[in-house]
Length: 360
Image (cartoon, rainbow, N blue to C red; front, side):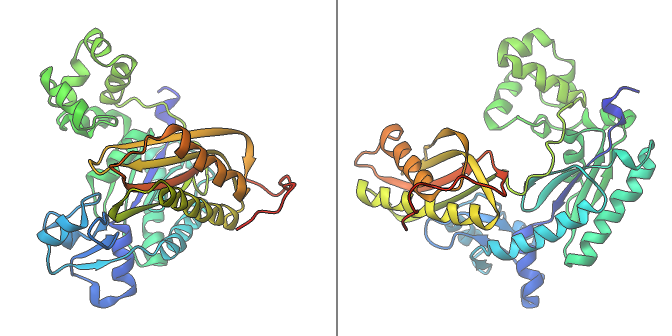
């Protein structure tokens, strides 16, 4: 058995998290279609309860479409403070069982159980205990996958949602993978799926058995990676616990925003919100980025990197505005959405004091 197959990696995914929290807090919502996201003509669905999904409502769908498909649904704005409260509790539970946790988002995390013994059976007992503990402490269900690597662990939780558990042992991985549609492979989006299907590769087994030269010719180095995943190979290590991999704020306008002055003012406002969260979590950032979506839904992002971490409001705001002015094309079309984010986050107990006090 190789080094990778000795790993015991878990993946925990809270089921329909935002909507489930709303149903937890308001019993009258239980068993009903609940849709959480941006409220308004240009809002987007963040999470839909499983009752809402029966009507064809799903995340990233425009709210207007969701309301047509599910006119009797319960539509609610997001409450991130409440979701983070429960997310923090879930991470506290994970820390009791694993010293290596990779937080992906508020509702999703990987965790390493390799230290709990040489057999998968031992790790399975621990992973099932985590799942039960989360439900007892939060009142919410989650789905858990356990496998020798990140890719298979996430696949396990996805295949058994909601409220499921799947352990994928190394010897059983290929039999599980082979009959799956090609889109179950990480990195296979709509465009890549069409290209693979154009080559006659419809199932994971087809990708596994395809000539490597063909995949490299069509997809470059990514072709080799796709075939490795089709073989159940993923040597990517867990990155360790980070409370937030990134922090961002964005706004979708009910009417396209056209004036450059107004757009810049929104960027400054969003930057200040991001800084407030940075400071609340005692974090500093090394990257600042801006996101713009045009009326035709074309979306672009631009970012810049700092030499050292910062939570200085004047600096982050200035960098966001600089990206807008120098690296974003604004014309008479205006913009539909604006976002500001920071990344490459790290904790800090000591920080360099600015020469000038932050204004605003």
